[in-house]
Image (cartoon, rainbow, N blue to C red; front, side):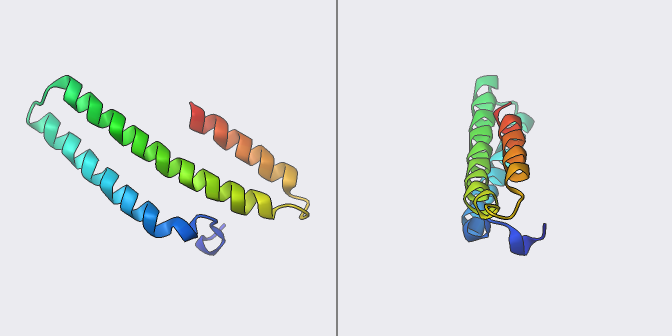
Length: 94
């Protein structure tokens, strides 16, 4: 599937902003470790990054469901798309 078929394209700018923030948070964690900051503070920042990444994933998952999965209706690919979605949800919840 190429980028023209991605259902999350309408959220592309929002996702890029979120990912840039996450990148900044990661660099902040790296700096905290370099400076020997308190473990709890580092772990709190790691938790914040995980939550931010989860939110990005949820946005893409939502758009995939509204776009790719819903658009498969009547194409004969419905079961395949639903199975694919369920596998993805299982991975996402781990």
